[in-house]
Length: 184
Image (cartoon, rainbow, N blue to C red; front, top):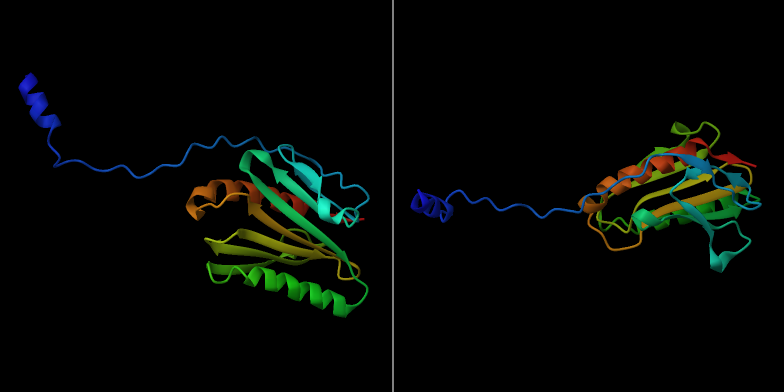
């Protein structure tokens, strides 16, 4: 009997290598709170498991970061007031230029109107598919004087398949932020 087990265990005919695995991810429960941007001309809800920090290089300009510590990710927000259509067009063009910097590594860039998430917002969400630095960018405007740009970045170099669960989880939080977004 022992000899039979030893012979069967040494057979490599049925060996199947196991694929590399990624660590298990325990996702927090979804719960939201007001972001509490100090004196900013906008407001929305953020997840309980995130925090707001002001961009140190642009204090007073209403540039904020929504930090997701357990995911090592940050949603960077940059705000610009504008007074004429030339400034507005320039900001939209700048946003498209930033998105297009990912085009060499992107498999696809899908544009999604913000009105699909909040009828009071104008702008676009850019879903950037593939191995790029940011898979999600957006701009939101009231089309009269406010312009906000957002970009979600993971703080470490990652593979698209390894961050896919975290990205999908955080994308739902960004959707919630857009749905609850208001201009002051």
